[in-house]
Amino acid sequence: LGSRYKNNDLSNFDNKSGADEEDAVDTTLFSSGDKKLTQMELAQRDKSRQIINQDKISSITSKCWWWMNSCNFEKHQLIALGDYVSLVLVPSHLTLVEYQCWLVPIPHCESFVSAEDEIWEEVVRFQSSLRRMFAKSFGQGVLFSETVLPSQNNLWQARMDVIPVPKNVELDAEIYFKSSLMEMAEEWGTHTKLIRMSSQKKVKNCIPKGFPYFFIEWNNGGYCQIIESSNFSKSFGVDTLAGMMELDPVRFKKGMKAKDGDRSVVLKLCEVWKNFDWTLELDGAGVGA
Image (tube, rainbow, N blue to C red; front, top):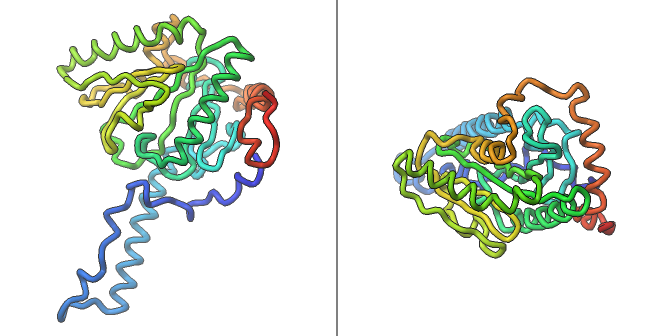
């Protein structure tokens, strides 16, 4: 992983994510007339803000264990590390299929729609390498998906599902997901438009920042939709795929953790990934395939 694994402590938490922008108050508002704050009062106010900010960071990191800045992050699950995005293996008891992964931003980011351009540049590079790896090494396609629910309130670290699937499932994904999303909209009485994506039109270009949404992406296409209903399931994407592939939903596997903590799966995937790992270029090494 090289030197990029260093300096990932919480001191680099990026306030530009939107989690605490409201605290950037102009202090001149407090400096007029006899209400002018003393230096001691200013120091106390700044200290209080730091405590509030740290509480927010702790809330995010404690529950978002897939993020490198979380105290609960399992380092052995890390497959590859860019400057702005990491590739993390999903624990086997939470997977639909073998070698299912997440793409996770390294800076705090509540959704990929809100992500900065440098994050998306690395996402696209990861997607390209993953597509080539699964196609050449396993004869599979791969789908990318994200669900951002209305209730997350910025106390969340974004993660994008990377789900390898048989080629025929990837080809049929457009029909299945279009039908499933339209059925849900009709059932809940929502009227949000189903937006078609392309290789040049990612979800970032389709959904306004701050809106909850779902997206599913296949090679050269995909769908995204703003979520209006609080009933939308976090597992909608993988549940739809489970139906397509005639597999049990992921929730049936919870609690069935691998005895070795998935270390054997990590080693197998890393052995294959190294021939497609574009992040080696960041350390001055070449890519094998």
